[in-house]
Image 1 (cartoon, one colour):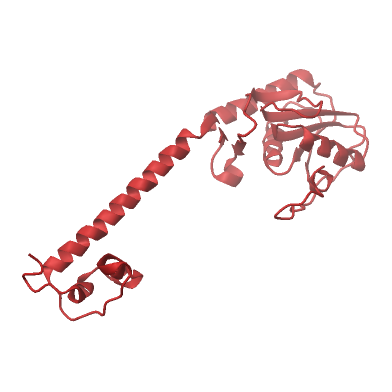
Image 2 (image 1 turned 30 degrees about the horizontal axis):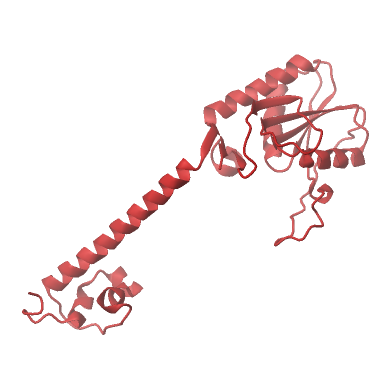
Length: 249
């Protein structure tokens, strides 16, 4: 019917939405990527045809995007939501205060990067319990990793260790987000002993996921969840990820 009315594909480009003209989509619709010169005028039949095709493309794209999002959600397991993360940190505080005397000279040191954030939160909540001021610091373990010299696509980023006090003769509460193989904690212990001789070191983690390769255990654990070797535990904090959440993917 369009052909009988004298339909000319070249006339249709001028009646397409401007974004469609500029993107070159008109040519794609009209002939596998061919380009047509714009002509003056146009007709309603052309506009209706191309608007229909343009709308269908948007609908199909939206449908495929939704399907992909659903698949991603199905492959993602939420261990802790925001409320549960907060409650778990409170539980860690309770474990720590029930085990360590209020007279203790305590320093809370977080392993970069998520351990650093967890350490800050613990430091804030422990302040009202201990009689002495609680010291706080951040430890970068990059140069102490046992895989530092292994070939990699990208070089590791070395950040600063921020510990403005002597760690000797203090009880150090070492904090990390996830305990997995134990290699990060081993590296942190080496880094600490290069700074001094702590009286005692205790380890607090938000998640103990199992799969330990070193004889290292956490003294204070938020949750224990055995995770398959091919899965990752991701801890999200509002300070860096805009939400508090722990997921397995």
